[in-house]
Length: 101
Image (cartoon, rainbow, N blue to C red; front, side, top):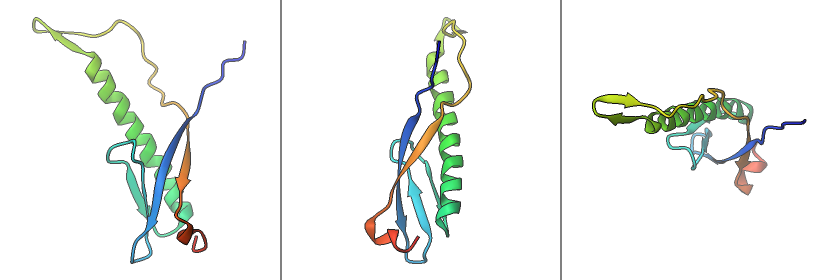
């Protein structure tokens, strides 16, 4: 039986500031942004920050599963996979930047 893992597509918006730095932001992940002077560095950093944001998001979801019942903490009785699902990055680059990358 072939079990394939579905990849999540994460969209990042990229802009260049007046000093020439590229800024990437992922709207669907709070506080998920980075910057770099060149595109290759930006993509590397973006992958790292997305991974960190997904780990934080997962930890927060795990914490929400816990409930305090009469002074005791009860958790749902199921094991969770701590691995972050694979993802690809879809980068939205404004047309005015494409010639400058």
